[in-house]
Length: 168
Image (cartoon, rainbow, N blue to C red):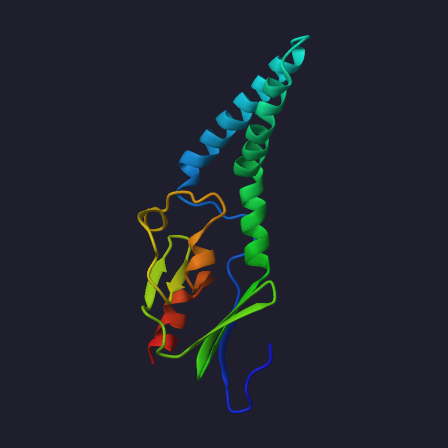
């Protein structure tokens, strides 16, 4: 990451790496297993019928694909998203780099500055308000996470100290 000549790097970090479980997984894991299981059960039983209409055979495929995503794919999606994200704080701005896409917010130009601390010692710092009830509640968003719509430093170590740095 290149910075302006008159700019000093104050902090650099990444989101927590690896597979991360959230509160919503208490609901999502059993739901996703039931969903995927029923979709596979449906498809197997339709395929066993000798002259089953093609509509019934094809009907189960999108449900199986959705089941695969909500059971396994969402964890892979989240893992890759966090793996390819870096955060920077300089004396002039905050920078979020995600898959080589750079979002830069000049200091003091964010609409809000909010710290959310988690029991595992990590935290999230948001630079704008979360857009809906679903994001604020922790309700699963099926890959359309607030991380795509709300700029912030998600699941970072030492979030409290980074927040103090940003408040200066």
